[in-house]
Image (tube, rainbow, N blue to C red; front, side, top):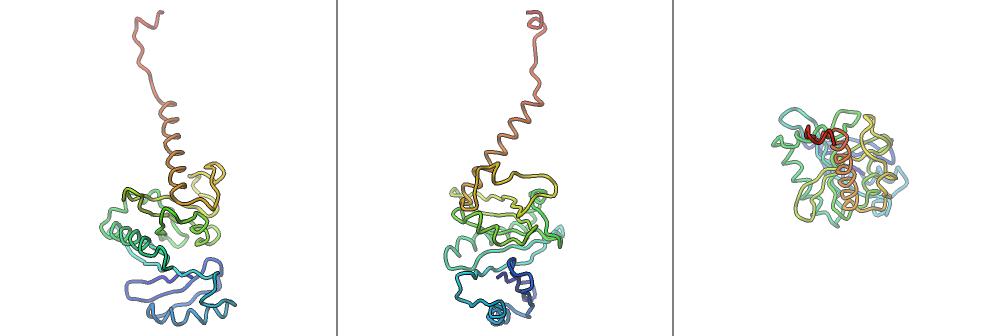
Length: 210
């Protein structure tokens, strides 16, 4: 279940797996209190292993780009995900996130969805948060405290960018650290290939006659 909190506190509750499960309340507390009734309506209970809770913040950059920043509020590793979300929100509010906006896929409603993850989170856990056809950007801190973003497409990239799990040699059980390594490796290989395709080698006039 995803709790989206706007600036004024108005909170909506949605679920990628249950599109009909949706509601809106004046505050996060009211939404949390009403969530149990929504779960009962769906045939689930609050302690069910099938239920996972996420908070999502709506924020607009100085240039007017709309973002949704999401992080899991499960106890472990909540602090690590909150740290990524806080860093992401800071980058958006300062305008720094605009440097990567061309790599961030948009939702059909126009926002850029960013999911805060840790290196040990599974790729499948990220994909489970996306409705069919929905896309997002996974943000995480690497072991050396570097900050990275990876575009994630639940079905396909409408602009033809990206690589499939099969091409990257990944499964949904792969941790995000491995996803990052494979994506970086593929991008570096592509850069090397393109450089070789367009490289020109200067040849001495004397050597041309040998």
